[in-house]
Amino acid sequence: MGSDLIQNLAEKTGLSQEDISSKLAEYLPGVVDKFTTDGTIPEGGLLEKGLEFFQGKFS
Image (cartoon, rainbow, N blue to C red; front, side):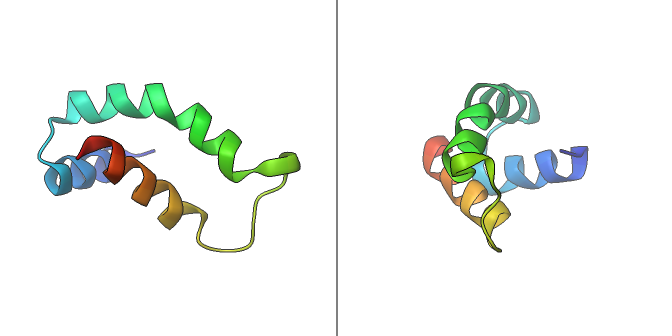
C-alpha cells in the first residue's frame, strides 16, 4: 500500500498515519484471508470491501 492511500485513510478516519500503518499491519493479514477464501480472489470489489472493513475497525 502506498503512502497516498495511508494518508487518505488517515484523513478519512481522523487517525494518524502511524496509527493507520499499525492497524493495517494488525488487520490486513486477516482481511486478505477472509476475502480470499479457497485461495482465490473474488470478482471485483475486493479493495472496497477491505476499505469498508478497515473503516469499521478505526471508527
